[in-house]
Amino acid sequence: MTLETTGTETLVRLPVQQPETRREGSALIARLVDDFGATWVDDQSIDAWSAQGGDRVVLFAGDPVRFPEGQDVAAVLPELMRSFPGRFAVAVVPRDLEDKVARRFGSQRWPTLLFLRDGGYVGTVPGMHDWDVFLQRVEAALASPVGRAPTIGIPVVSATGAANACH
Image (cartoon, rainbow, N blue to C red; front, side):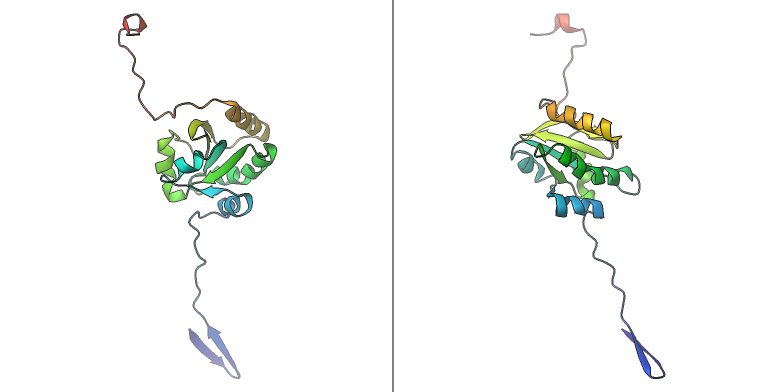
């Protein structure tokens, strides 16, 4: 704190404090959590969260400087929730853990909506889209069956073809 005196007035200069940095680093991500009931998940908690049942959507927004459309998806996600009322719960991953969690599910594009159901992998809707396309892709994801995430396991294929393969 410094004091400056100019005649009859005393000016007090207080040190400027930087605003508290939220872990998510984005007002739109914070809005998802604060106003729309999104849950924070990480590599340790995502399995328990997704196993709670029903359809689940995880937002990987990505670095807002490199992938500004991630902020667009964060802004549109509440509208998607309204278009599919009660169909899915939403979670977000802290930016510093997104890469680690996304790798588990084979997600390699930012932004991405990861769809899970009853603890299992359903699929992803990567990128930002026109509204009608977004609705179609979310509807298709909600109708898709649970499958295997692209990074879990390696399919074994015979080098000589199916005719000589074991049954």
